[in-house]
Length: 166
Image (cartoon, rainbow, N blue to C red; front, side):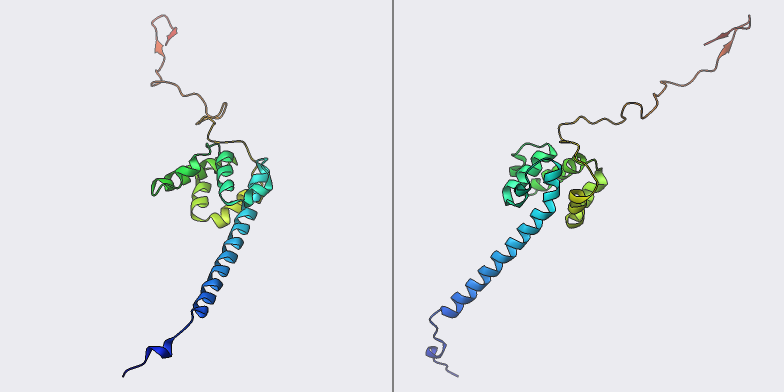
């Protein structure tokens, strides 16, 4: 069966229209995603004293999140390194959760379910405590744990004159 090529002729307007429609849908999709991310981060930015509009600018909001967590701005560039960026992102998210008074369990939630945990951090009752990366780690705050006695306790020794000797 021989089909002439002239029956398949096209001037390309159909494929150009399809490509234009796909591009338009992609632009709309990314605009919606950026708006949702901006709304989710806006609460964190206002709690930290940063302008709310900064949450809506795609790369600038990541740099400001590093600043809120207490990391330098170039940590954003470190998150772009393949494989190592995963480590830097998790450390930055952990510092972000500590900046709002949360623990490592909350960091796991930020890594695995950011759609749930970011709004809880942004619009929940957690106050911004300041950048966590600059603070020292204190295992037991003052007055939290009793001092530990060194060594084994010795029983008192009875002297022949009746006095106790330690």
